[in-house]
Image (cartoon, rainbow, N blue to C red; front, side, top):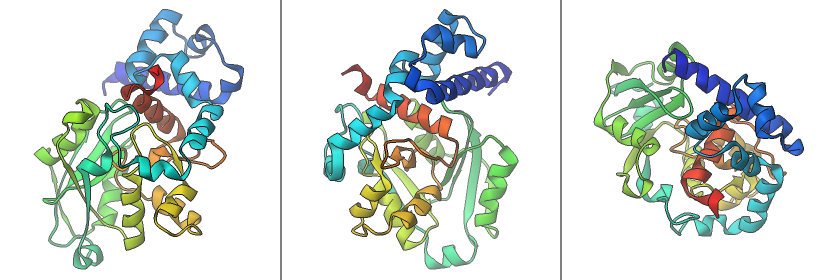
Length: 283
């Protein structure tokens, strides 16, 4: 992002943080705009452009009461709902077009020896992304506030792989999720390094409907291991593919949004953006 876009993103992130901290007071548009040193009209336009929904709608969405309402309405039927076409019928379901292939034992143990990995940086509505791919699929997608840290994190996972700075068709296809109609997306393949348990959890995350929310307990129940909530939480936190594997849709059983590997404010923004894109807030 250029300097102005970086500044705009920082202001919207600040506004989202302020809304989250003060939602119980239901702060007005003027108050939030003052907090980020913008005129009310300018802030309204900028926020809507970045978040895909007005500040008022966003405030309504992130309230804990609303999160609890979603949980009350879904319960354990969430995974049954995943067999449908999404909450509003306008979004494609992740498990229909995102497919995970686990790396072979050899690839897993030898640090990626014989793996050729392309990597690049790209823009998204939520900040810059680091994306990497093998010839079988996307192996990493994360928000890259620090370019060097993002690359070295991947290098640590695959110390023996061959890395090439290159944008390939596989990466472009995956990144189209931010810009294209979700009904028209091509299949996206992921090539991931993980234990059998981690892969099972990540596959279960793909069954959460677009704009839906679930809890760690629901996921544990979904893999027929209801006592594994803590282990599920660890696996969710170690998700190597941001957004495509929607760990941002997992919240606490209390209804609070909870932590996110790439920042709680970013998690809030993604949830609101998905709800707006899926038409959920306009119902």
